Image (cartoon, rainbow, N blue to C red; front, side, top):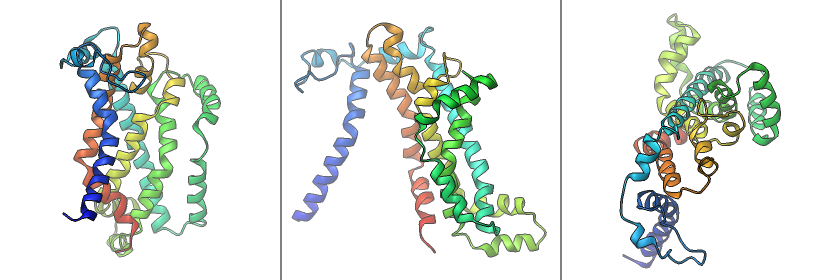
Amino acid sequence: MNKRSVAIFASEASVLCFCLAPFLYMLATALSSTGAAYLSPRGALHPTFLPAFLPTLEHFRSILLSPTLHFPRYLLNSVGISLLAALFSVAVAAPAAYALTRMHVPGAQILMFVVLSLSMFPAVSLVSSLFRFMTRLGWINTWQALVLPYVAWSMPLALWTLVSYFQQIPMELDRAALVDGASRFQALRFILLPMAAPGVFSTGLLAFIFAFNEFLYALMLTTDSTARTMPVAIALFEGLHGEIPWGEIMAAAVVATAPVVLLTIVFQQRIVQGLTRGAVKE
């Protein structure tokens, strides 16, 4: 290996270690018998690290089986709410992207930039108004109170991604379908969506990850395990127990991270293909 290859390898290894260190640290603490796998304030290994690091699944059993933590319920809420938000985002963005790329919509580019600009408002600036709105609807502490904002916030990303992808699909294909008697909806359903499957899938997955990780709205619009999601539940562990149960917190963080990591690993090729294929003309 020449010096350039060594330098590239060392840089990549450094970046990889930097990115993986928090996750490995989190996993080590979750598996330690006392939950004490942490560093001292001066940066050295805590003196109890080695005797504490006897691998055990006790912390995982504690969060999953404890009747007072309701952690399985939080996991169900996070997955269910995120899945609904992703499905609704794609279901609304796909016809909108079809109209903007296949039909002559006046001011289409301006409309897209307006949608993008609306997404740039800080989420915290809308919390009070959104809370009053959900209170009047009687939706506080319900799934729909979170699904609606998540769909709104992920819509610009979904729309822009699908528009860039649909633009690379030849218009002659759906025109031929229209000539054969298909409706606009049928052309979208049977022609564009199957061809744009990687882009649609990656868009839905990104919307799912966004909703799965969101914290602010889930904190303000939920009050108990009925609709509370995992990010909020983990943040409130200290208040619920009166102390900081590091082992349980890290175990919960591992469980919360696992679905997103697994989805990304399994479908990374489709994600990259969906996000990059629409970026260049073929």
